[in-house]
Length: 280
Image (tube, rainbow, N blue to C red; front, side):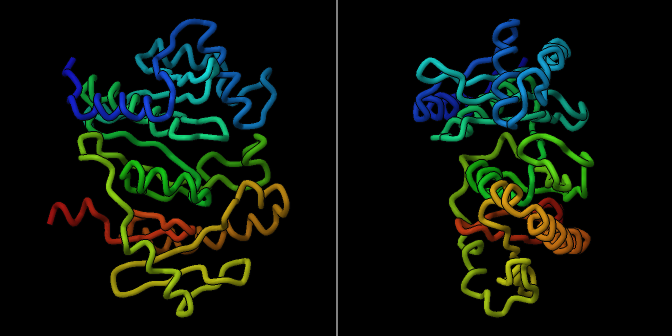
């Protein structure tokens, strides 16, 4: 086992301290059952039928993965599960990650703990999927962590019936995180350019506002402010947003663009594939 770099370990320790939590792996029956219950609450499902049952989490740990749990003020406030992906790629795969509604840095602390675990075992990258319409998650993944959305997947899981995604189609972006990269980058100023150029939008969103703007090399695409609330209030409008954003992203990804940043007010920035730029 290769020791993790001091920078990664120090960052994970600092992140946990800032969030006021202790993050550790759990492999005991009670600890894993508590994580299963926690994930059921996050996805608004009965604890009797959680999205990730206790026995499945136990199996993933037994297969060499890890369940991380964050504890603060005497309660479970975050959890994540990581397994290994393609061995030749030295890649880990984050199966699921979630925090309580009031995050306060818990999500960042959990991801840094996952990073340390994966680096210690020889991984160099980590992947996971996220809903492209959830802007706060996109900003966390692309800006806070510095991942790149490497692929756009149409209706990856088919119909979903949990309390968060029910009635929607399951399009997902795949985050690719370079575990050996330096500290997370600051906001990309280019991500903030789209709102100022919105008058020149080439497409309109389902709410009548601008949907996408582009220049010679870059494209910006807007998502709704709170897709989870919108799904509950107006599922038809939420589905129209899904299809509108899908149309923009699939065309952009076919063209070779990738989502690399997210503005504070819900605009993705898509730029030429950075992995291809690095090879040329």
